[in-house]
Image 1: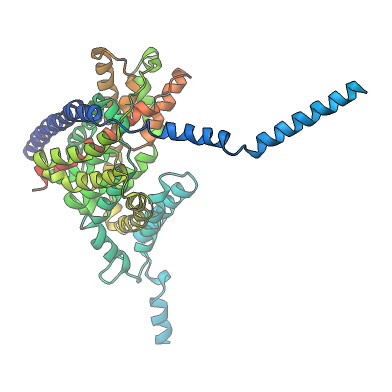
Image 2: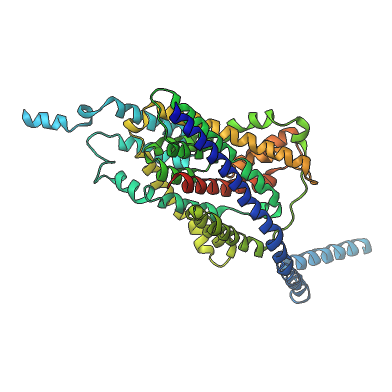
Length: 91
Length: 377
């Protein structure tokens, strides 16, 4: 019974030391995130902006240079239907 | 006639002991849980099969010269397998949600109370006849409350290798049971209104933060708790490989092929510890009971901490995410999300719960380091 009491005391100390340490350690990480990482994120923001103009360039290129087959098909069908209607109304 | 007798004596039927048959049935039970119930199948399937193999009479799988004997000593006794798995877990972990809301680290810390409170339970069980847990045994059992398989196996292999089989079975069974164990506790400690709380959207986390974070964690561990560096170090290595963006091949290997190969051997190795003499005793029942207690206390203390933080903090915090502090990634976070959705169908807590969830992994690794430093010496 004495032995068990001894063990309970040891377990109690272990619990106290353990919980204090876990909280202290993880609180340290909170401070680390709020100070070091926060500053770093301001100094070195992600380079996301670059990819956007590239994408828009590509689309503008496609429009000015080669006209896509879908657009060609749409224009052709529109023109032909217009001509057909036009010729029908004339006759 | 004599040769016939010798042949008979070399069959399994002639050599079976009752304990072996029971343990094979336990192995079949684990296979059932894995295949039919989908309980942590990746580990329980090889573990169950390992339990069957190790109890085959005459074959001597777990004796010197046997396959499982070498797998156990090469990978688990040395601590290598759980550490490799921890590296893979690191490579799968995204700390983004945690860095975006660092307060949630406190939830991961609070949930570790389950571990330390269970120490008392383990020692109190010594009053029962047939149970004699030393402080080392109690610490190895208590880590089940960390809800982290590799950490539990690592610590048990260092502090109480004879209890490893039962501890691993308990740890993985309860991790699989998270969706059943946690919701009633979460609901008991929160009100309907609290469960409805919606949280502010998380901020964007830059790449540089994600790269520096694992290095910072490692540095803090080196300074303050070197005993935890095997676990934390491998975890941070895996995470750095993921976030650095220059070693995608290594990161992919760590979180796929390597972790899968290691899981097969880890399962078999743990299964080899499921022998009749090590498993069929009152202590195993005690361990299974204490594991459930550890889990429940961890969940409750996480939820209570989140309640306190919700009262103190300016930004609202849904107490349900506190339950995810027990780790069990990502199951516990999914459970928090599900219980939250039941109360408020527009409330998606998953990303918010991932913060305490990964904080719980760090928390249990730190707790394991503390137990190793204070009890393991």
